[in-house]
Length: 146
Image 1: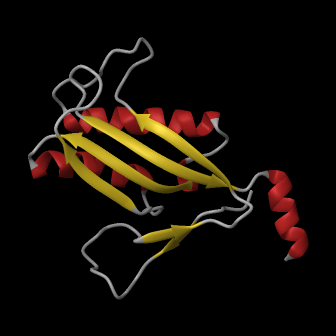
Image 2 (image 1 turned 60 degrees about the horizontal axis):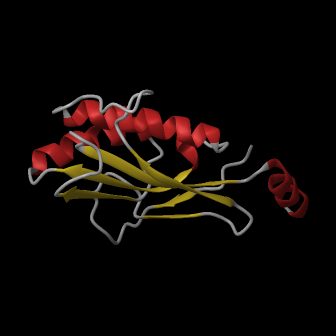
C-alpha cells in the first residue's frame, strides 16, 4: 500500500533537531487521531514506575498496538507530541531517545514537552500521535489518476 505521509525537511531551519519539521498527507488520506498512549499494561497498571525510558518504551508499544487496530503502523504517523512529567531536561531526553529510536528513519514532526503531572498514578510519559493512511479504495483511485 502506498504511503500517505510525506516528511518535509527544511535547510532554512536548524539542523540540530533530529526530525522533519513538517509533514503532509494528500486530501484522500484517512486521518487517525490517537489518544495519548500511556505506559499501562493489559490490567491497567502503570509499568516502569520511576523509569522514564521504560515508560516511553511501553507507550511506544501501546501506540503500535493502537495504530495496528486502526489499520496503520509507525510509518503512517504524521506527527507526535511526547509529554514527560518532569522539570529535568535529562528526563525529556531519555523519553525522546526511546521515541526517536522507535521511529527510525521516519522522523516525524514532534513536540517534546515537560508537564507537571499526567493522568495515571506514577505516570511519567505519554505520547500523542496523528497518522494518515491511504486505504485500498483511495489508493486505487490515486493510481488510476496517476
